[in-house]
Length: 485
Image (tube, rainbow, N blue to C red; front, side):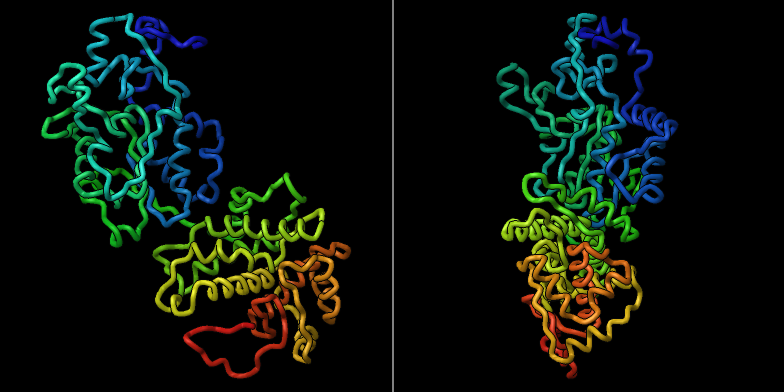
């Protein structure tokens, strides 16, 4: 329609009544079928679920199910729900002034029914966009029936001269306002049991009691939920009748490969900055940052029930770039190239996103984070170059050699320092970790090799970024803490 109808009569003449979907789930199903036939991406910006989560979501939508996404934090659950909006029609007609998006051909509120009865084909029609048809609520223990369903509004009653039991005195909550749209409820187990009861009652039977007055609302809505498996026992639970009315339970997951994780972090992290020096992020650093998350998810000292969010490598990468940017600005460089030393400067973005077990609490988050960085460097080097021959490098440090490569030191000075270590620069070039003449990448690769040797306890590293002699004496645990420098 070139011009959207403004009255009920014009809407009837437009032919909309013949082609309109019976429900919002039918509308989503119709648009989903068209998208599947076109072969386009279902949800842009959601990576890694093409063969696992997405087929299950498609099945649920084709089956017209309400569904729940069950997974740990940072697994793109909210992003998936928000992407469902793209499966709605661009515009939808409603009775003008309706608080619950009344269908002009099948109104459910008393207001819309009276308006159509009074004005007939002259009833004014409004149009809502697809974005306005998505309502999202974060479930909290203090959320009430009034927030979700609605409450009696004494002011409406006084102004309109209605009795309190009249439907026109109701101030509708978020769920009725999502009528003919999508209602998403995050962290469902946190919602109080009595509110969950009201939720499934209006889902299934279409009725609810507000302040003792029975109200029937035949809502047309797609209900989507998210939950963390830990919440089932830690903070609350989903009551059985509500769980029984949720059509599909879909399990999400973290990236299954480092390469995929790097792709997600590259998409999400803010690294393309144009208001300062030029930024160049080496792929070695991208891999190291991503492997920190993979190492953390396998570490017994970190709580697996809580998980390690994909936000961790994203925010860590942003801090890594910022530290390199800061160094370049202070030293007057035109290009900022992150190094392994900058990964250590990103500790605040790592320690705040890991939940520790008892053993981990004894060691401390900072110590574990540094250990994860070293292990990530070692894993990256093994993946890129296998078991390298670094005996000449180790012997130089054992003979008393030391090297200072703190994150504030300029890149050219660090490059000169690495030249003093026998065969180090030649090794990284021979392994293909850096190209001859690219001093920045040579520095990154040399530092990666030294960090891997620290992880293997061949050499040591202090908190000031000084590499030195390896510890040869027996390592006696002190308060369950490991010392690497």
